[in-house]
Image 1 (cartoon, rainbow, N blue to C red):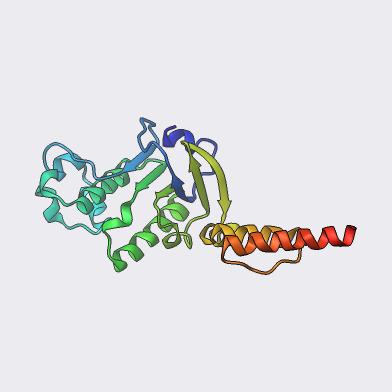
Image 2 (cartoon, rainbow, N blue to C red):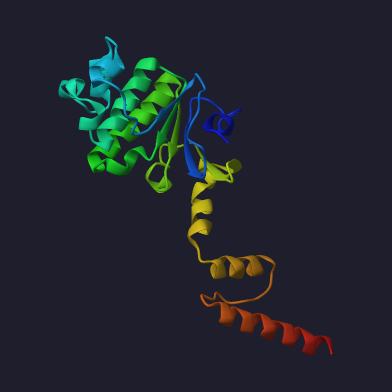
Length: 211
């Protein structure tokens, strides 16, 4: 499933975090995919706009990049040039494919503020595809969980920490908590064999009472 289908009927003007497997290609006219795309000619020829320099400044690049070809650019520069092109084209949705990987701390802070500004002030839908969703959740409105190229869950901001807490817990801890939620008196165990012994012990106690 393409990213266009993933975002179909989703609310616009938001920042989504995206986790899972998705086909990050699309021909949809309103979506820009930001990746390390190589282009023919120089950056200036590729951007081909009076807004080229101002858009490059927005992505923390200076005018020297205008005269570079894509083969002379780093992966980070290629992604930023791709983003500059998207800003010039002014499409509704910007999809970022691991954009943050080559950024330092200060650059990450800057781009997070840029995503927020584009979303809130210009009503852009920003989609951040990343394995490090914790770095972006303070600006994201929803987390989309994708499996087999389909959105299987949308986690709202208010439920995020509960979701992440469960996601990071060992399976044994989650099972123990589910048992406790059923009202069965059981201690917290970190080891599966100890939990199994406790379950058998409770079962034996119930059998003794019933007899």
